[in-house]
Image (cartoon, rainbow, N blue to C red; front, side, top):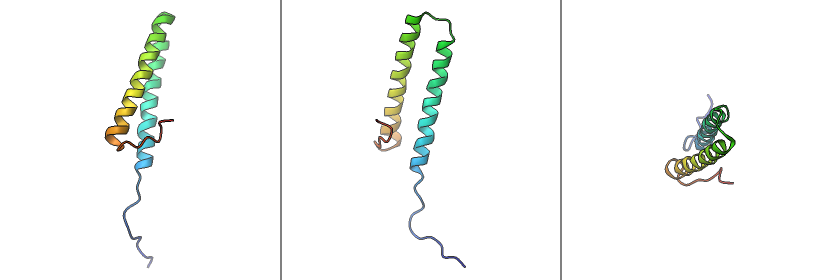
Length: 76
């Protein structure tokens, strides 16, 4: 009979963080795609793009600080 592993269970937080980050980026990408196909003027699209990137940064910081205990593996 094989010995059971001892110690704490494996920490899957890195994988969970990666999944959350990818979802955040894919959601942002979808909103940008909608913006780019909306028929708005270039100036309106540029403003919308800037707002979306600020939204992405804000949501990332919130996720990092509130769910990941400040671990900023995607800060760079």
